[in-house]
Image: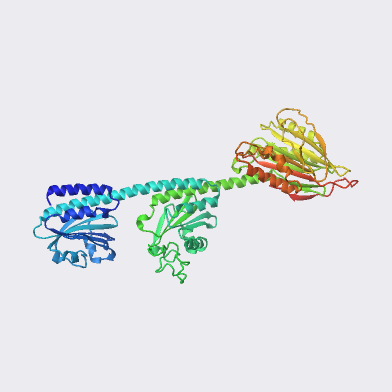
Length: 615
């Protein structure tokens, strides 16, 4: 083979190398030109791992149409001495001097006329090395053969390096995409346990074969979620997460360690992840139910686990344990796991902070509402309160039911403008002021006027709306409903015949002007008539088309004819929640069904009972 012909072949080899996805794809472009070199009778290449494990051998002899290919995992201890350093090494060895114990190529070389084996050994990566050699006879220009071997090896090494680099870039792109998707998925939930479950689901099988997530509590790690590519092994993984002392001890010991740690081989001895001779050893019946987590059927790899601490804002919130049953090359890098752990920790911490704030808001809201409602045989009282969004801070809706000295009962409901600490303070002031005045027998209009005066004296920066209604039993079995409103939505009355009417009221907002008076409206209600007071969170719930719940409220209330107060309050609240596509305002309802008294009965105050109010 002339130099020009070899140059053309080498050019084609470089072109093939730029397109190859595997080094083995270059074989035809390497072997055929070398075999065409004068004096060459055999071309043979080998691939080694861990110094002495022969993974692959390929040989092509002169006059043969097809190569001899051997794929194996055979250990050849004596071959360890052949392992090259960082630079390729070209060696000439008489075929007669080759020892089969260290040279698996020897048997093939003896079948050809060549008397010398010219071989170039070279390193591919940190895990393995390779060789490319030719059997030549005395007619060969050995120096030229060595040059061509070196050039071919240069192409092979460059091809392998390029493949690794492209693989790293592809892996990096895939990792970035996975991290971005993981962040979106985890950040889309503010529920702590759901966020933790998403961490496990997102990472399997993209990152690992199995995942365990634990939340760090004051008394140690608390198992939250586990997932695995195999259903049977997921059950085993969940049991390990909940009950295994080895894992619990390890997680507790590593709770302050920021680095990701990988454990394998002897480091897993005594753990539920230790490799066994058979995947089904634990159950003995061959159905796989007792397989160790990570066992992947027939093509098994040594189990590896990694543990990453989840740390956010300077504190540890939990840990994530990955279980791998795959080749080392497919294990994620520590940098990727740290990035994933950081994102997961921030999402979990946000969910924890949300949960703490939610509980704080709900707790404060509860203290602004009555814990109990009065009950006698004359009326059926119930209330409902739904927080629109706890993260918007405590709202200004309030209600109460106040027994009065004359045997009547006063119902009040109000709404302070805005949210937050100032709104909460004003809510407490308004409710307790009205309650005190009404308990003393003050009429609704006077009570509202005095509250307005108090707000002006306190220079309150917010206004509020309120409505007060009193129910006074009458000798004929009816009740006198006296209603007074300060800019609040009008109450509705559900009559015993199923019709719905609005109580016509009007009045200026509280806390806006000095010396405001409020007029009362009176009407009679009969037995089984129901008075419904509510805040604008109910009426202003808006569907996607823009319509307000207010437009259908009378119809929805009429459909609840015949139900008790508790059912009406809860049903209207849930219907408004389901109706609205927008709007985050709180919803408060106070419902009173008048049961009536027999004509001529004693109208003095009846003995009171207290029932827990809705929160």
